[in-house]
Structure formats: C-alpha cells, structure tokens
Length: 120
Image 1 (tube, rainbow, N blue to C red):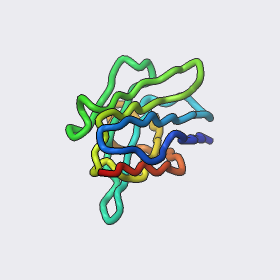
Image 2: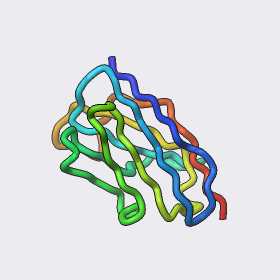
Image 3: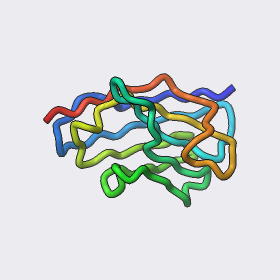
Image 4: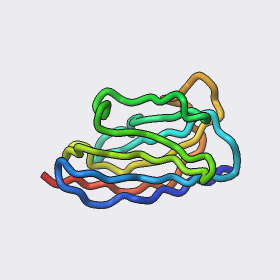
C-alpha cells in the first residue's frame, strides 16, 4: 500500500519561496504529482514528474515559478515554489500514480496535504 507524507508547508510573503517535500513508499510509480485545493475551489493539478525525473509537467499558472524534482535515493519528490503569490494559497497534496500516459490525472494514492499560505 502506497504511503505519501508531505512536509514543508507554511506561511510566506508574496514573492517569497517555500519547498515542499513528499516522501513516497510502498511502490514504484510512473508519476508523482502535486495538486492543490484552495478554499471553495476544486482541487487542481500543479505539477508532476515521471519516475526517471526526465519528464516534468506544470499547470500554466506556475510555469517559471515552481520546479518539481525528485531524489530516488531518498524516495522523495520536491516542489520548489518561488515567486509566491497570494493566489497560491491552498492545501497542497502529493499524489502517486502507476497509470502511464496520464501525468495530470488518474492518481489513486494521496498524501494528507500541507497548508501553504501566502500573504500580500
């Protein structure tokens, strides 16, 4: 059974940075991704990375500001968030998927989430 544990959320000022970490255990997954859900909104895809780390995927609103990476020796995926904006405020979830060809959806395994709050 997959287990995903996020860490690194917190409070940042607009323009600041945070780095989220997700430790993944219980299997090898085609994609590991980050999603977020703001109050009153649906959960949305943010970024994903394939197992090898060669391919990455981003939602347009974070391109150039966020970077997803991974360290397979530590079974950990990171989301480096720079240039944070108040609209980035949300609960961020790490997710893992064995489904080839769907980096932005169809994730069966989820972490518990970590809060990111960006003040203006």
